[in-house]
Image 1 (tube, rainbow, N blue to C red):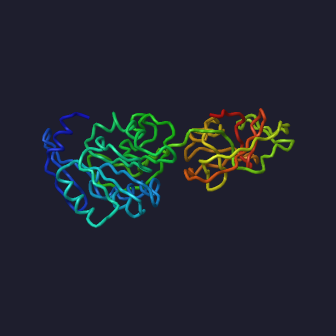
Image 2: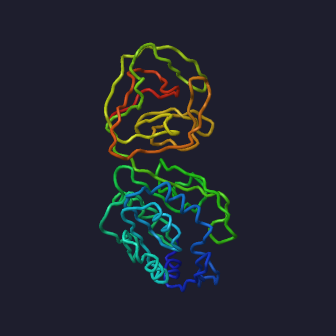
Image 3: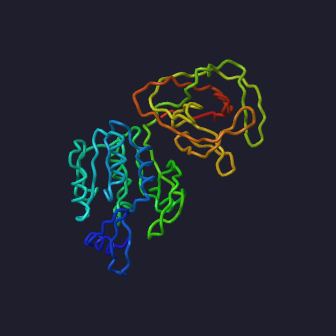
Length: 329
């Protein structure tokens, strides 16, 4: 992003209307939108996916206050908002009056020194620090376990490495929108990105008390050419851990570093649990597939008994094919 654009925006007199904020770019005389009210479903979904009651939240970019309202509706313990445009700051101050959990930072988000956050939500405008600073900033400022990060996906797609800050395990959620013609986004589906930070693995396994190692075990080498074969295993290992992923509201509960077998883009591939995304498919023992529609991560202090089989073959848990192997941290 050209530094001239950033400087021009910061110096511009903004126009505030009921459904948008605009400014005139002196380089071409065109009127450009900063934020518009059609973004409300996006901002509400971002808050829903990333903010829990009692969280400490950092919001970068106040704009029209749409995301701020959505965050406040979820009762965070603290809600820090960064805004650096001199025309927006007074409106942010007015909005914050009487809200005891609000902390205003009237400067660039890169200048925040203290604090760690359960969620960092980025929606700034004309901000070329995002692409160079945001990933490392989040590494310093987000909580280490279960912290959630979201940002503006200007591409409307799910494969742009630059947009994803080179993170591998970003989960996208579709949001239906209806934008009028504007200068920055005109698609009717928005792909909302969320990155969840997972704790360093201390073991791997599945929350499944039926994995006792009792022989024989149903195995399947290759779901693309399935053949179920009974095999013996050496037994099972049980351990206790915190932090598990929950697929499809209890279909499977698995640690983040457990190897899995999934179908993605028509091919069966191997990925760790923390690399799975909504839309991936799992293989079932009845030779059908089940699509992943929901992935949740339990970042609480809840302790789980996890199990894994000592076997050199892919096996089934809750009738879902699981990849053998894996490595402890």
